[in-house]
Image (cartoon, rainbow, N blue to C red; front, top):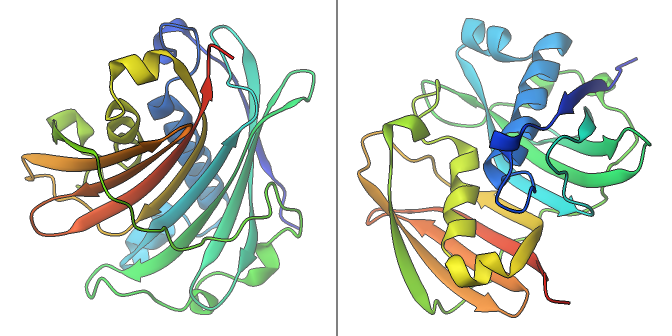
Length: 244
C-alpha cells in the first residue's frame, strides 16, 4: 500500500515576506519538491522518466490557504497520489502545524508526456493505479477558467534564475508574476488565501519577457500569462483583506 510522503520544515525569515508570511514562490516550490521526491520514491519519478524518454507535466494546481504559514513555524507537508484515469493523475497535498491543525490543502493534475513527440502517453502503460490512495485533501474539479476583460497589463522579464533544470521557466515563477501584477498597494493590503492555476504551454528559456493581463474584482484577481505567440497560463488568486 502506498504511504504518504510527510516531511517537516522550519520556515526561515528569508522564505517569508515583510509580514512574516511564506512567500508564494516558496509555497509552490515546496509542493513541487515533495511531489518530485514522492514520485521518485514510488518508482515513476525523474529517474524513471529520463530512462524512458518521458516527463511529468503539471496542468493544474488548486491551493486553499486556510492559515498562511509564517516565519519560524515548523510545518509538516504531506503528499500522495489520489486519483487517475488513462491520461491524468491527481496528486494531493496538506500542510499542517505541529499541533496537526490544517493550514493549507491543495490538489494538482498531471500528465505524462513523450519528450520526443511532446504528446501525452497512457498512464496505465507506466504507472499502476493501485498506487492511489482514496483519501482526498480537497475534493475539487479542474474546471475551465472563464474569460475576463483585463484592466491592465504588466510586463515581466524572464530572468536566468527563473529557468529550472527542465530548461523552461519554473512553474512557481508564474505565481510570482500573478501576485506581483496586482500592484504594490493592493498586495500590501491583502494576504493571499488561494491560488488556482491552469498551465497551458511552457515558456522557452530564451523568451525575453512575458505579459500579464490582470483584472481585479474585489477579493479575486484574474491573470493571463502570455507572449506574442501563446497564452501560457491562466491564474486566479483569492485574497483576504488585512483591514477586515
